[in-house]
Image 1 (tube, protein in one colour):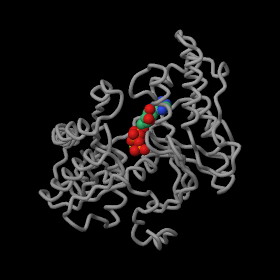
Image 2 (cartoon, helix red, strand yellow; image 1 turned 120 degrees about the horizontal axis):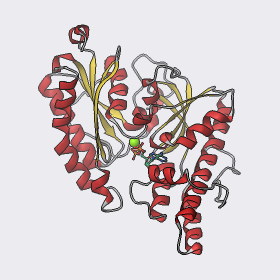
Image 3 (cartoon, rainbow, N blue to C red; image 1 turned 90 degrees about the vertical axis):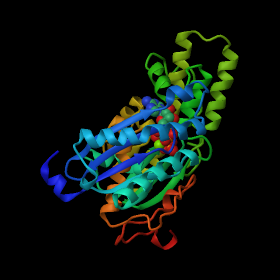
Image 4 (cartoon, rainbow, N blue to C red; image 1 turned 60 degrees about the vertical axis):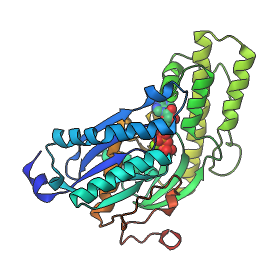
Length: 357
Ligand SMILES: Nc1ncnc2c1ncn2[C@@H]1O[C@H](COP(=O)(O)OP(=O)(O)OP(=O)(O)O)[C@@H](O)[C@H]1O
Ligand SMILES: [Mg+2]
């Protein structure tokens, strides 16, 4: 690593443990992500068909210290090169968050560094900023992850206006449940998307939920029921039918997301749309959103930073720690639930939300 980094102590260590990925990374504002490591627990949870919170927490505990040691070594960083430690404070599984929070706070205490709890969705929303051509706020964001589907105006870092969100299942959750119905295992989204590439999206017609209704909310649970009913009627599924079902289901989700994103664009007049969260890795969603309207500039994070990772936490944490924010008590206080529009604005920002935060 360059000598000047060592002199300026500007690197931020990011720690993500909100669900079933242990992610750690080092973000340098001049160089970007200089080291990262990610461990997915998918194989362990796959045996049970979904995330088992206790297994998740224990595995984070086992992995964190060696992973952090490895990235510091690979970037030739020491604690002296760090300006702070950022960790995911919430929302997420409370046991998993407790491990990451305790670990980050203890390390920061031992190394005498500022430590800051970051909102997991803010980290997702800002992940596209790790790319060179990302737009500056204000921009419109479509956040599509395993637990959330939201249209958000990012007025500035720390200043988020939610235009609409899922009333039930999130888009990623719908992909996962559909994959389960089709017998594709866990986690299902990427597997279903791969299978959909061999299928005919026109063969089955699934509803595009809530597109006929005004507004920008989503609802995907009826879509899943519709797939379940179709599968029941079909009986035994051959591989082609499975692929056609996957393609038709994916098409219904993507159409719905595209229609609502364009509607939000019309309402706000914002020309930049940033897509974030695990479902932003979906190739057809990327293709269709980019193709829809030449007047809109669509950006995505690198695919490796769509699903949970430490890089997005280090990056989001950097903006706040660099602005002087830090946890002001030693209490370990993760939040299983935490509204995105209740996060602290960045110091000095004319936040439209500061009044009711
Ligand atoms: N290529 C893909 N196509 C569709 N869905 C995908 C793809 N890749 C990942 N996903 C979905 O993304 C989700 C995981 O994303 P992410 O890690 O952002 O969610 P999460 O952290 O579990 O939820 P949240 O961020 O809301 O707390 C899963 O539901 C997964 O199925
Ligand atoms: Mg996530």
